[in-house]
Image (cartoon, rainbow, N blue to C red; front, side, top):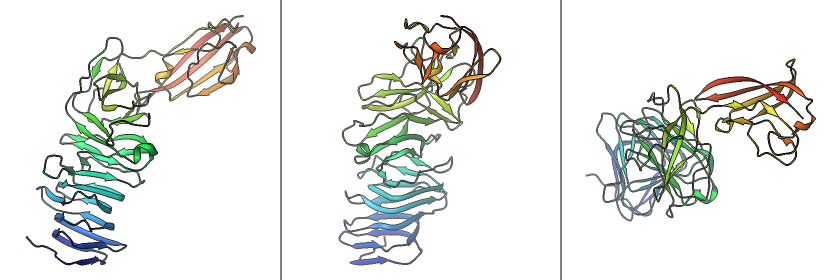
Length: 375
């Protein structure tokens, strides 16, 4: 095994190709600004003094065998950026901290939790991460900077299943990690709300060292178009199992291959999955009686809260627009007949038309309903 045993090694060249690099204990290795280094094999760091903050590391092996990246110390090894452009899988052991960029072209980055020095990959940059079917993290990646949203470019041996979650400042300091697992955390159908559960894989979340999230942001999970699970009747749901095994239905909306929860994750969120409910009916109530009795005082649309990507139009009998709403939501029946800055008590007695447009599983649906105003 070839070793680099220099006391001071300055990596100043714009490009340096190597097959294997071992940095022994006590060696001072500092990458100068603008340094790019390509490796086709193994890097092993045994020094507490190594600083690759200014280094752009390119993983460029050919073939199919797994290549090794080893940080042999307990200190996180800072790297300015990593580009994986390889036909091989690179296995990461030890703790690596990517400061600025993590670029996926081809090849997998396997974060191995089983060796004597388990792998841990942290990302501190703010540039959104974009993986693909041929290149992603097989294992867990931690987000260490606040962002809206952070994309977790993760998958497993069966495919690429990214997730998106906004990371707040309080959570970024400790890191929020996510990986794909195959063990069902105990998700089960619930009569009337959960019809089927997607059981091929699940998303497992780790919140820092405490296991508790400070934020409660919605989460988006991608099936990456690999399943026809949501074809036919039924609507998408995101399920959560917390650290005590309690199952929660977070609701769901669809945007291409991403299924986003309509509720925020809980502080003890642990595992997420996709499910399908019975088809949610969107029904416009046919009567408005704005008399302040807290019954039918306002326009009310059953089921619309499950489809926040919507538009609602209130037209008179001749089709002239009276009022329109984007992202309409139902309000509790108020003491006075107002909703979304509109006073329904000012409507004249008679017939009106309500047009509702909303997106269900990526497709737009339209409902036209005649309604009556009585006083």
